[in-house]
Length: 121
Image 1: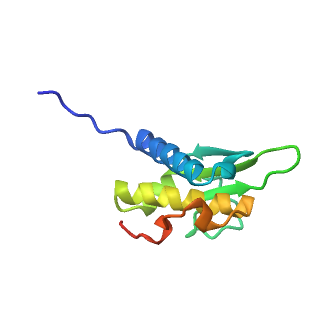
Image 2: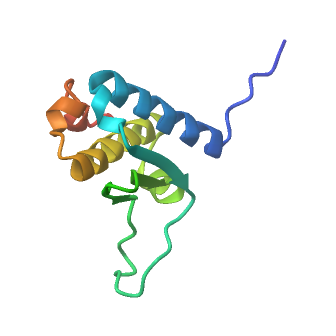
Image 3: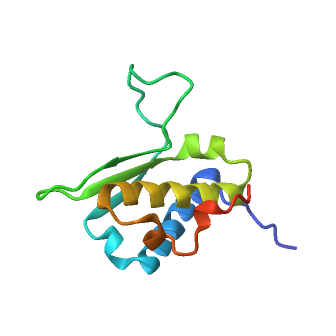
């Protein structure tokens, strides 16, 4: 009987981000035009941040010369989610909010099904 291997945390997180980007692209094709999405394990903590608050993502608005950028932080998101299903939802919600923030596209257009209101953790 073959043994089914479970994806590593890093592999699973990468698939969550890839799936979320595809879902956003299907819902609003213009949303990711000129926006790069990346993954980092942890954020670089600046001294002015409170030690009890760690960001889940960071975003930089696009300029005439550069694409916008959204970076999601794997370990803080993993720590925040209670289950793998919850992680998938949290990654999607985080990307929707960050992309909305830098593009000005409404949350309802990026997520017409309202997944951000579903709390399935």
